[in-house]
Image (cartoon, rainbow, N blue to C red; front, side, top):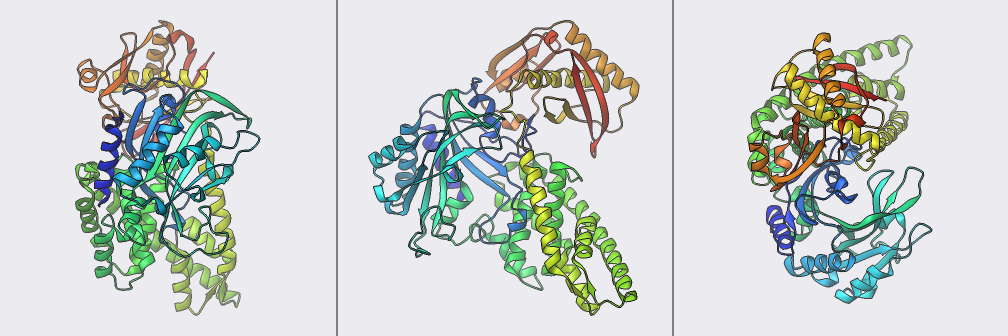
Length: 585
């Protein structure tokens, strides 16, 4: 069974159980500063988990493109991926634990044909915030799970929340027994030895964690599940790693043929980072030195470094991209549609990075000369780290060059500094979880509405080409990215601000209608990311001034919002400008 066959089997199963199939949201989130990328299927659905009605109803299923950045430096081992696909089914205040578990068990054992003896499950052990989940373990026994295959663990294993606050709850996780021997007498599904591999997670979302660390009950009980496609595909095919499946195998073989210095870890890094970069670019990402643009740049540059290590000519990149598209186009048609753009962006970034490598090499030779003047034949860890952090110069290249010069390098100190750098990056990434869509305060709702007024005003002043390319909303301000080829003049900004404030002063009524995507288009509604919408959409109208497809929520009348003030206008990336603005009351 291939990955796309598993995906289709999954969607059809839940469709036959009353779920509406909704499209994958883009990797680049809309109006959500909580994450750099969509990291889980639940992120695009947070408003609906908090009670906003979904136009497709209360039972949903999808495949969601996801990208997680915290393990970039781990990619190259036998299991870590940055881009992956999550299959999910959702109950928005409809069914709960019993029906969810029954469907999961039936799908795994009957649809995928996994023997019951290969499946182990875990449940929440309980603590001061929530009781032990005996109900879940009883349901598992009832559907046919042997009692000795059911384990209880605490929050670190069986409680799910995206970030520091938001909707959350106890979960039950399903594991596949690979048949490997136990690593010890205490080996169980919480062990990382590789015997038990997690395949599915059903979150029973009935709590909301507040910013003070306390929990309250949600007004509706939800089920949020996630099944990793690459992982289940690997296990069902009896493969050791995702790189051995049809998703990566042809690219891995091609890299082996092209390599002058073959190394499996380097080939995995190139294959994985190339696929991840292509997916980000297909969804509108561009390399830069900030936020998600920096992550994309880092992925491309790391991939190029390992192409260099393998001794593969950079000119092979376009053919490697085309091969990837050929393999993945049935799963992700957007790759074929954006082929030229993907090739252009990656090749341009490659050209920039080769210059960086040249600059790094010059800096390296300066450091060597300085050390020789001081009668040293060793580069300290701080220097090696500075070459890495400032010039993107890989330590392995520094080491190779040092050897040629008869020098050693202090790798222990570099490793300490690098680990600190990793921790700082991880903390920064986690901070992105704060203030996301889960934080639907009065202020963020006002700013969300303001982005609609700003979008329309920009199109009036600059032209129809000024389309939204992303937004970021917090309690303090809005940030709005839009397509425009040059800097917006002071006079144009003043006019945009005047138009927005005029609409606020009119105290326009904000209304919402549900309709089909076709009806929405015919009505003149703007769709920012059309590929993410299902058959039915919500259309928010602000008087007769603005009409957009959007999940909401919004204010009832514009008069609630206060005075709109643009604080800054700047470049975001090539052909994209950024406005930061506030509302003053």
